[in-house]
Image (cartoon, rainbow, N blue to C red; front, side, top):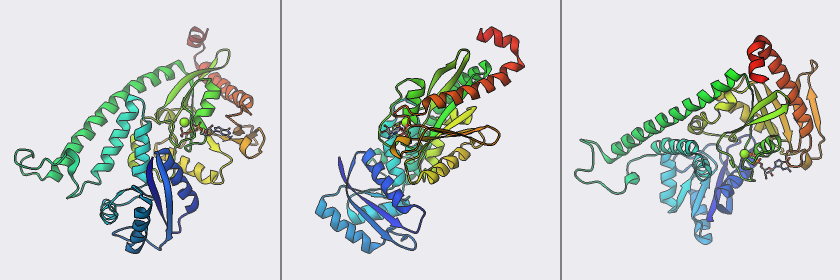
Length: 373
Ligand SMILES: Nc1nc2c(ncn2[C@@H]2O[C@H](COP(=O)(O)OP(=O)(O)OP(=O)(O)O)[C@@H](O)[C@H]2O)c(=O)[nH]1
Ligand SMILES: [Mg+2]
């Protein structure tokens, strides 16, 4: 456990307190022990130290007294700010993106997940390479260690560039393999459903209950980093390919979204999204917005969605299927953990799958009989 303190600047942003609570959860997920939380108000961030030199001294005093090793900022720091803060406080300083990257690094399990995290880390690092802080490859320096006319900084940048390119190529290859698998499914005309939602909403728990399989569910942010897909039978001759995906979070940086685009592909190409929401969370509506924002970014904005209000046990809501005036299913309220509403959800999915197959198989009954007999 790394003794850490959190620093958050209230700039009048929406849901400030919740984002600080979330940072504490993220920190714990990364294995930090939160010793103190510093919150202050400013109209705008200080360009050199983000919080201003007075605050820096205050935090420094606390860090010395409490033997804090790591200071975590609830913001994106510029590379210069991060370095200034580290110099002033004499300890490691990371920002929100750095923290999320760290969690991703611990959690990544599949080969592809690890490549994606490495890519995101390198891109983050590349933006942070500044003169005087370039010990990326140890203190080499000296004659014969550099490219012609290059400074260490340029060499590091170039090496990162090369590595980033290699990683992208390998990831593209994996992506192609997955595309082939997906096309096979499409050719078979299989109904595909992806579970998406804010981190910790209960996606994996729902996936496990519906697919009766063990995806890794835990009370940690970003427990799932890889996409898992299972074939689920809803009725005789009616099946679906169900995928569990990585969770979303507010202020997810572009490089992170980019790195995980490939993993989220199953969402982009799904016939239906189950958008899982922790209905017991007071900030559920902004979480829905965040998720929809990322979905737009990865071009999954127009995939049909059903909202799954999860964790109804935690807020005394009841099982309910909501439809619009045309009978279209809008949402299903469930408790994935206690198995409430899962029967209703299954019925909804069966109904949608049957509609789907009626449309696709109707077009080509003969090959349908061949494949589905
Ligand atoms: N009370 C309650 N807790 C639930 C329910 N469903 C899931 N949880 C809990 O919520 C936590 C997160 O569940 P996960 O299934 O790992 O959530 P996730 O959305 O897959 O999370 P990430 O993969 O980290 O994005 C776990 O502690 C679950 O036990 C529910 O219906 N009721
Ligand atoms: Mg999960």
